[in-house]
Amino acid sequence: MIQTAERVSHRDMSDNYVYQRSILAYLETEKLISGKVLEIGTGSGYGISIVSPKAEKFVTIDKFADPKVKEENAHLTNVEFVQMTIPPIAGIADNSFDFVISFQVIEHIQNDKEYVKEIHRVLKPGGKFIVTTPNKPMSLSRNPWHIREYKVDELKSLLLKNFKAVETNGTYGNEKVMEYYNKNKESVNRVMKYDILNLQYLLPRQLLQIPYDIMNRRNRRKMLTADNTLVESIHHSDFYVAPAKEDCLDLFYIAQK
Image (cartoon, rainbow, N blue to C red):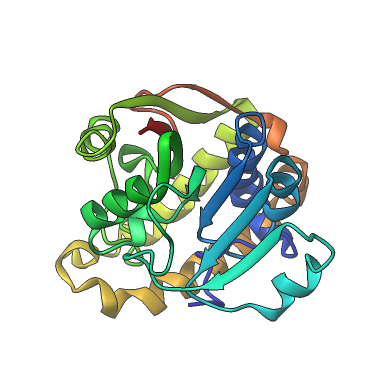
């Protein structure tokens, strides 16, 4: 999976829309965090340099060990890299962290209830969990890499099983962002019209992962070739956070222990 389009790269311009949308979460988070911070889902590591200067200690976990990520951030003395599949969060004591952050990960977790419970466990009293995930009504097709996706109320309900309060925000885009989104939607719909048997929802998701990933990557590069000015011009400042509604692109929630 380390090569999949699910792991957004800041090195590939065809990823720019998703990358800029994703990096906004780190830029918003750096305004909020302090003390000991745990990240679940390092990915390609583009958020480390944003978050780590705001943390006394920053522990970042991923199921894959990517030597390139470690090498690029070797100068950051307060960063610790851990390879682990979660849940559980093994080897980390109760009440250890001031903040836990996890962006575009929870939709990949089989046991999301246990995942949230474990995050609550490692947070100090009063600590906060900052999480992003795609907003299901805005997804263009089934993503077979995702176990599930959440609507606004569904993620809130899940978090409130363990946390005492949840601030429900969402990520939105300006006209430029929505122009890209709508062009992408048109492109996806042109392909989906051939799925007359609705197989994307009927087949086991594991059978669809590789075909989906190939088509997803191909579509991103097609979008770049068709209008590289639009793709390259999208910047994280074209996205913003506001109260979550059905038309937000991502859910951006802050849960307090």
